[in-house]
Image (cartoon, rainbow, N blue to C red; front, side):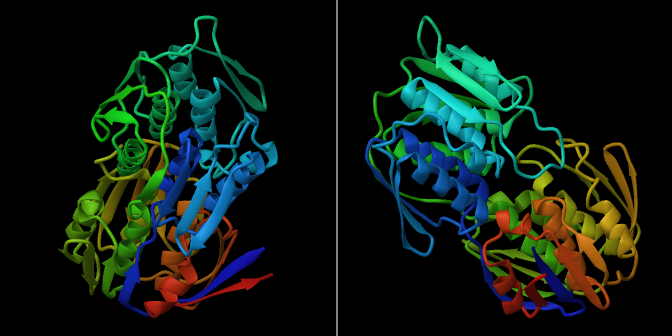
Length: 421
């Protein structure tokens, strides 16, 4: 098992280039199952979740080739299997997107329940509701979800989600793409990677409108053709580096971003005292002196993202005064990293879905353990600020979603190394 060792206390400076969005990539790659032809996908992040997905597709019979760093060629035309390798499927959360893609293409799917970060109970009931509305018979066991076209076949339908769900919105979009008729998703999620998935499918010949609003319409087509597409930059990776500079101090240009996607994050960092300048495709952040306290409530996009909750908590732990952090998406997400930050000297009181964070002037290095992807990123930020050495274990969680994180932080002046136990 690998670990990160960090010597804190050095402000960050220089430039960092953001990779393609993890959450977009893990939806777009399964969507290639719907394409009758070759796909060339650019700006693909080289992270463990992407490699696992490509292994799953290749095991199913797809032709997969890394043409160059960040560029993948996919040809899924020869796939006939509707049961992906369960061992690989259980290694990541987004493998459940295979359900919608396989159901749309083959009229059936037999997919193991997914794995991934275990920071909260994340049911797939809204996915199942959508599949049933489209005419699928669904059988759930302890280990699998079995989908098959019902007696009347599969066709478009109107689906109103009970809660805003990114995963269900993505899965229903894919499931409906090749079905006859029109599907309308009401109360849909609006995240940028949902828009990116719709744009990818539309580039290949789909007819999807309304992505990015709360009502998405999918007019089914008979087939999709091959083509080329570039994935958007990663909003959460960019937010993580912005939060790191805000906490550790310094002056950094964050390149390859869409500033509009970042407003929900940069507005809070500005409120805390960081200086932020937006350009066309990059953001400069400067931070010096102590941050100010603030209040954050996580919400579905365009609200403050739950995937940035842990990182902003580190900033709060160093701010002057008392901050309040409310988690409205995954209420148990505090447990797993707040205790680790407390071991480093942070003053955090968790009460249900709210954390009261009393800022302290310094953290101290110690050995901590990442319990999920974003918690691991937060512990790295804490290590960059802390006095002495911080050792972060379980870094395989971090490498699920951050490409070349050691190299990127090192280029900014951070003293961070990756070693094997």
